[in-house]
Image (cartoon, rainbow, N blue to C red; front, side):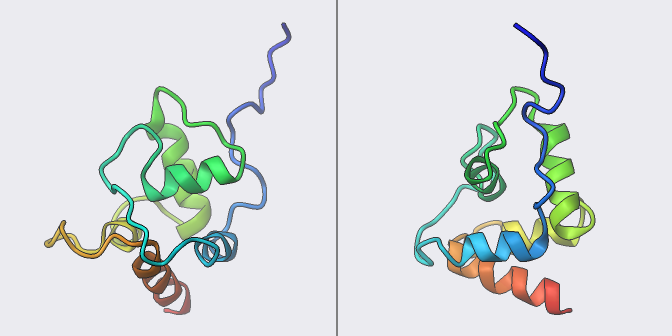
Length: 107
């Protein structure tokens, strides 16, 4: 079998606008597990919808996808996904992350 160097890598269309468009298709009341490291977090579900497989070593691809969406992966981009640095129990519905992503985009 030939090695495909692009397998599992982010597609070129990964962006904030694409992420927001995907969020708009989700049930706004559906929740996600921010701490899930098996691909069921918000970014993992977005990656699956875009044909990016969730690797065993998730950190690298997660950082790449977050950087393509938010311009970085650490700090405030994680607050868009987590809800709050201080209140980890804050609303983690797709509707809430959609609102936070639009606020982040619109600055």
